[in-house]
Length: 290
Image (cartoon, rainbow, N blue to C red; front, side, top):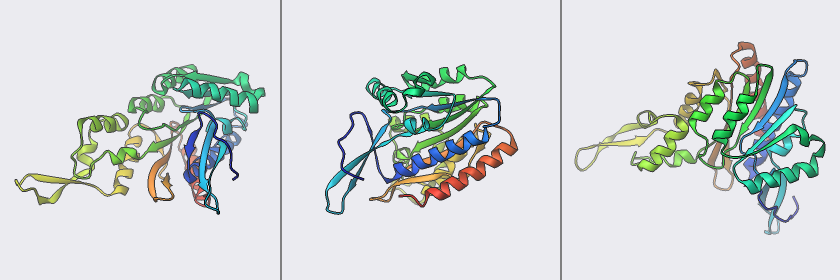
């Protein structure tokens, strides 16, 4: 990747970004092929669309800091023939940049696109209300931090025409102090994206060691069990949650940053089986990237 100037409003990403975008694009391609002969309107929804561009930083062999600008998920979706596109973004400057990027790269599709500036939690409800039983929606939610509320997922889960990829921010785990000494503010943040405070009882166990005052001490369960709990929470509202998810890490620190999860509202066993195989295959092939 060559050295390029930064585009105003672009996201910052790393090696994990390439894997994320690969998974979303591969699914979109196959999704449209599967629906090719069905008389349905195919809709793509990007809940945190940004400016449409992502800046990837890397170090060259000579040690020079370089950056490359690549297309983000919104622009990548325009390579494929959906009947309608909804791009949601809270930041007005970013949504304006996204519109400019679309006009420059895909002017022929501008009439099919809805650019919506506002809180995704509120605007997604309005978008879903516009869809009908004759629609099928592929949705990607890539929040910047902990903005996506559990109530929003519940509303999506009740709309029986959505295939959803959710890039779950694992920063939420870092808010769970290992000794259960968690501030009220952080408890509220965690509960807002997990739906309730049951995680306090589920993810912390009593330590065999007692405190100086003989009070019980607690410790968080191992990391893998936390991830299993998060996916189990999704399963309480979605008919199908793929057992396969992609853990995206900061390569230099080997630290988990996100968990890319797939879930769908279709209750058909056949549809779920097909989606499960597809997701498993795409995630496996993504391991070879980066």
